[in-house]
Length: 349
Image (tube, rainbow, N blue to C red; front, side):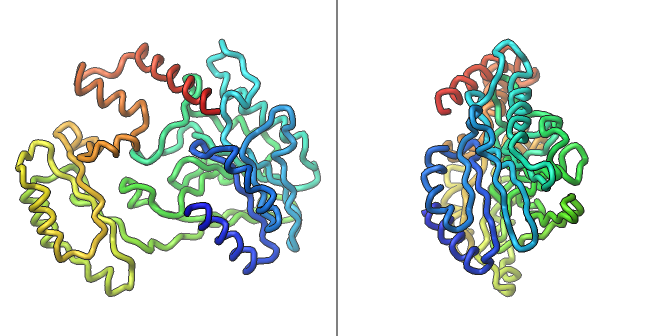
């Protein structure tokens, strides 16, 4: 279904904008082989697809886009796994240095007279994550890299992975545009946007955020911390949805946060009764314990939601719950988890 929607969008976008070029790279959740399969078909629509980086043919990620407004070179770097890179196992900065070498190798295939836009799917050091919908990319114990890896060659660096729109290292020319819509309830207050990047005389000149309208509201009750069952029922009774209906907006998403100490066995029935006349898409109940009231970290009634937690966060939750609620997770235990994650990602590569 998702692939059909993507292909239909590309077809419509190309029909509406004949000079349009689209560049698609694989992220850390994508199958490189699956992404690459559609390459011959999508190339007919000026859509360039890169599923993996071949260190023996680094120039393959360089795409030249010729339009009526000029020519741009794109270094379409996908998510880089350690198996894709030249690294030394005993180097604590092996992943960062490997990423830097990958970009430098790719730059050898660009024309020095043309502007260059570099893409990347990674967690840049200092980037702000949303908490429950993004996982740090952790390889070989190193989960965030500095902006230095991109070097001086690109005129602009367009990054993916972090969902919040933001600059990197304070640079206007190195940015995450973020997701165009909320991927979780923790992102309900984000300013979602796409970025219009302009070049003048082959040089980067400006970047302009274009806000993406919120077509489907996202409601979390209460906004912070948890509430008792009686408090939740009161909040639901007071919830006025007419503002969304009058504005012609789609049915809102709604999630509730219930105090873990509330032991009323009929809580689901009572909440369903309170929701009976509410036109919402109900997205479940979070259990919030007292230690979470200040941190705002979620506990889910549905254990399937555990998949949304970043592995290190899950370790921290388990350690506090079962070992020591006052102390941080020992570094040795963190290192052990890092090694396990690195091994898993090696197998998936």
